[in-house]
Length: 465
Image (cartoon, rainbow, N blue to C red; front, side, top):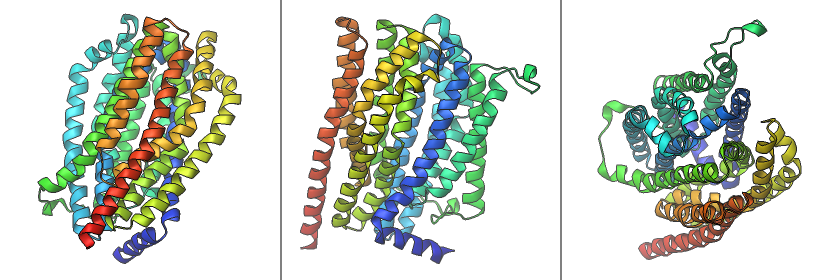
């Protein structure tokens, strides 16, 4: 088994383009299933009414906050393991995974307590109106009960991504997602009139279905990784020794990545606030629907970008900067081409797509406005997003944080506030503010990547001499 894993890793290093797709395709498939769930989940919740969609929408900033912290730290774990494998240091890769499990335990406990103790107040601070606060809180409270399962599942996935295995975690995640889709109507609705069994829990039923599904995913990971020795990484916690240096290496990438995602979560909250103050709850509902559809279009970019963390990390660890450059050019050119085609298709199909989610004419009109404006930014996202992942693969976390702060805090949020609140312009100007910020990221990102690679290559040549 070990020899097979070693040969698989050697093949991964020797075939960069095929290796990139070996990660990207499972990620795209897994995210497609997850996004399908998000769409189906929104369709189910939409049957409860526009207010229920808005109630869930006010949870999104908190959801992105949790995902931001966990995926951010997970990226640090992935990058550290990938570089260790590139350096042919198996022991370091194992230790990085064990430190990741320790971080997951801490995060799971902390986030659960934070959500249960402060969640309702935070929802109110995020702008949830009085008539929606109870429904919003019922969704969040149930979600908090499954926080530990969510955090550990993401960390296990990040560990496997570091060694170049995305097929297994995606299969596990797909299992959980399909189960979630099956459980949603059972938990949300009263199905007696259709001859079935339903718990009629409403919005909180959607959260409960997610918690049960995440628990199953967590148990599958535990069984396969700790009892079946599925991974190249070894999970023998009895020989664990805490290392400040290794923890620092993980957190140097992980913390800035987490902070950048928290900033995006904060930006989501700010946009919800701006939209509800400037245009009302319908605008928040429409923006949420548009956001779910954006995520569907970004699937190829996210898959390619995820693959870049591992491939760039391995090649940088092996000091093969020629391969680092070639895989970057290959990946970004493909991402740009794919989403350019997707944006054209979305533009023409927008009214039909939005109509699937709501019958409310006002929400539909706002949703069409948002999606048709923002689809023109997709090619720029195809440049900006991979650049961020490249920097993480190189072990550089700060550039991602700086670019995110620039995009959200200095460009999109201030412009949106000015257009909506101060100048009282049409809502399309809020979408313009997002488009401008994405364009800025697409310019700054590649320049910073090129500068970093040149510096690392020069430093390596100096050490060689």
